[in-house]
Image 1 (cartoon, rainbow, N blue to C red):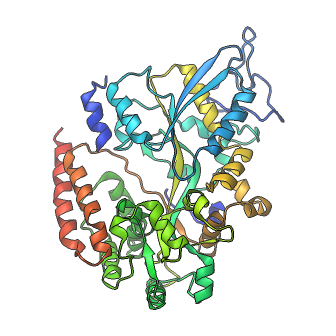
Image 2: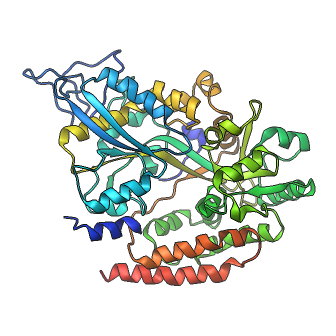
Image 3: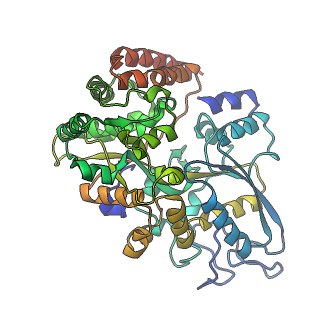
Length: 491
């Protein structure tokens, strides 16, 4: 269900906080081709218009003022795209006020508010998960289910449901907890290795290695030319995952003929996690590249922007990151710089599938304890973000990959996307790549899990520099995870 090819779609900290705090719809229109005021999509909970109360076409009252408190994480895409959408939304629905708290440290803010256990002070809507994720929140009934949004009519195409015009695979990739979807996302993202296309062209380097052997040959060529082949931020070691992480485990599992089983085991923390053959093989290959000197020597001290700057300045050929890179680095990038993209192929031949870390970004979550009208308007705002105009704006201004398939299928619209977005979409199409979004369907609050993850993170840079064999670290992490899983069973 996490899979999708471009041909098809061109296709545990929170729980701990909760334990300390005594855990005890609707779309708008662009104004064109609007349905009658009593219309409501099949299967939705949208109210029909009332004769006594003046309503919008979505059935929500015009004369009842609502203020939505929004917690907005400011990441690589910035916030201009969101402010643009809010401006048009409040112009159409002037009775709705949007109170935005924006911060790059929104995860901490959310965790603090959750710990305080004050529903009135909590955001109605927030666009990132708190530290530890949302699984425990959903299981505790703290989040509003959002399956219904997929059945809403699109504001700008009211004869089409949201699900009908989203990229295939996006609906299936939404995390499911206890049989329900508690998130809705407004942009897609892909991970891999991003590079300076002009530099590759100048040196004649292979921009599309098809196999593991071809990829290693590329790295050897780059190193021979005196440039570090790959960099990533050692200060934020999880960035290695954009190119070398879970998706590669799945690629190997697919080659070995049991991808579906591997996916299910991943989702449910079925053991072994760290010491299964595919995960060991992924880390071993990563370590072997490190022993060959294919990673930048100074990466342990780099943050994400510094590692990306190495590519812009020609100190490194490629950086492991996501499609947000172009917008995040736009102030430091020359006007004629073109971002190229490739995945790391673990496959031996092109008859095997090439897997890419795909995902969704700008997640949106609604707090369940808010008034019903607030939650309906929050869903209305979320749906507004996927109108074609807002999707195009976010794609052009922020580099966000769109969720609307009608945008990606339009050559004129596609040509307006950022160079990184165009490179990613073209690469996936050319390679018929399999995309994958990792998510867990259960939560584990035992601290041994956090210790296992910390152990891995602390050693990623050592693996990359060929200074630490990953196998003993993986074995230690597996033992910690076993304790965590056992503790969860005994609760």
